[in-house]
Amino acid sequence: MRCWPLSRNPGRRWWSSEARYRALFENANDAILLMRHDVFIDCNPRALVMFGCVPGQLIHQTPYADVSPAYPAGRAHSREKMFEKVYQALTGFSQRFEWRHTRYDGTPLTLRLR
Image (tube, rainbow, N blue to C red; front, side, top):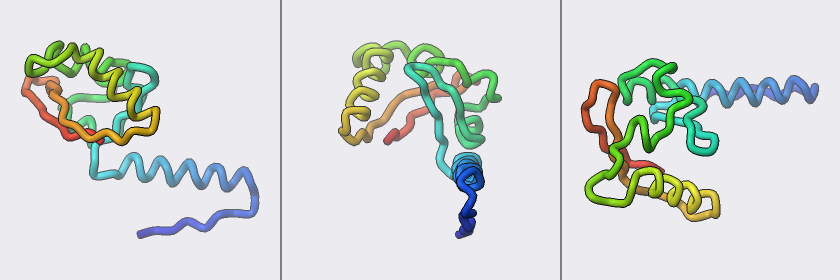
């Protein structure tokens, strides 16, 4: 574990927290994808390995149209199900579920999301 001392300078504290966030994000062993509304806006290197792609293939894509089957395993449409899960998470209900995706080479990928 590495600790970074905080400076007494408020601007320095912000930079230090941003650097720590970026280091955790970039070096996490789990795949992390950040979304704004229904579009991926950033991902860490582990997510790129998991999907077998480069950043330009994943960023600005939608999870329900671009990397998920339209109707996974006979369930509701991926877009509707994704919005339901996101809404529940944003209203304070912890989410743990499996989701079917597709790697960029067409290989099926089942993920445990939380």
